[in-house]
Length: 160
Image 1 (cartoon, helix red, strand yellow):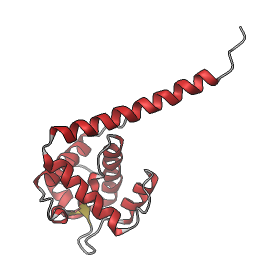
Image 2 (cartoon, one colour; image 1 turned 135 degrees about the horizontal axis):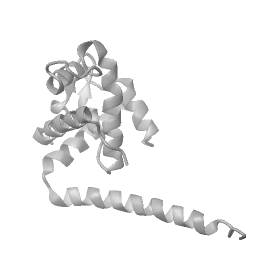
Image 3 (tube, helix red, strand yellow; image 1 turned 90 degrees about the vertical axis):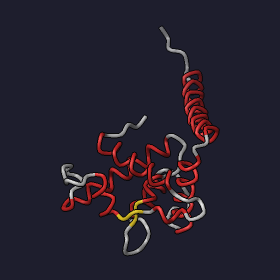
């Protein structure tokens, strides 16, 4: 199971609050530029990996947050952080999504869908939706356990 570092938890909290405040009818309006995101997470530039001169340190943290969200059966929350010049996330977002097993991750529609799903999920305050997400994760873990037990059962018995 992935865990978030303290700065990643701060980032996650900000992303959740943006998504939660979003309007499902206009989900793309919640997107935030990389620079503004860093300024809001670390306004005094105390974290050496997200300070203005070290923006590259931000990208792995955003990727880790999306991997964490994916592991918990939720949309890729880092989709909300974009390049202001293009209105889209950097190439690393699609690369990570592909690594996580998503198809057509490089398509703009994939990114838009992730933003829509993030806003829908976090703005819903729907306990059923939250429970569904938790159950999806439990079922995924049970599937992993079943496969491990089957592999162990298929091994020839050790001669003693």
